[in-house]
Image 1 (cartoon, rainbow, N blue to C red):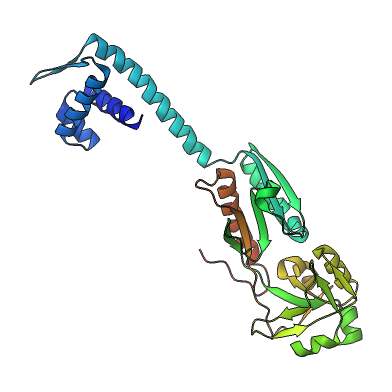
Image 2: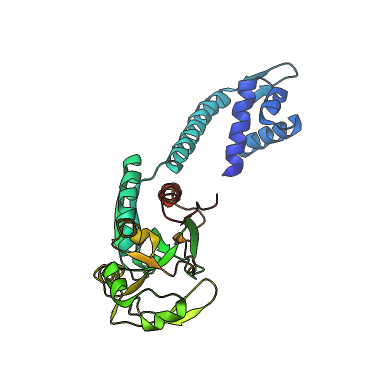
Length: 303
């Protein structure tokens, strides 16, 4: 089929240009190649399409009919390619996204803005702190803190992420502030995970055993307990920014940073990534970089 289309394009160009040499220049081919392709076309069809002399070209009756059909076919192909190119710049269909409960509240307005740009798009946002299987769950995209060790997924960083240990002033007034990581063993910590962690790791490699009276698999509940003075909690700056700004939470151990766990957009390996996924990832990367600039001690992600 590819050879047939090439031969058709050569045939039409020869007629438009008026000579083999002129067509060759337009097609950036040698006259000999153009002549061979034209001859191969006539041989395959079993009919002469062009009467050729040393001075001129003229269509046979069969050639004129074939030219008209070729022009329609090639026009349809050009139109299909143009529409595909437009589709590559527009998102449509249903976009299925999963993220954590806490981050869903930040992601939701961004997805709404993205949908306004792409009116043919429908958005379904799944909020869960469980790490779901994207393929089995039928999701196009997952937005998570940290990159998953899953070779079947592409992980693209969309935003930086600083993590902090913080607590309500009521807890700190009652229990005091830890001066070093090893003092965490004397504090009540709100633990989050399924199962919850038994240690907190610092950027310098220090690991400290932690415990407390409250554990949950829900980040929003852990956040709520911390606000109510239940203990220290380890959270993303994205989740607690507003509470730190208002004084409802205060950070501790600022001189002992935690490892970063950048926010990644993850999607399945495919030969061709759907425009809705590619465009959404690019959009989130741009918008989250803008928001990250307003967060304490955050730097923009590399280009």
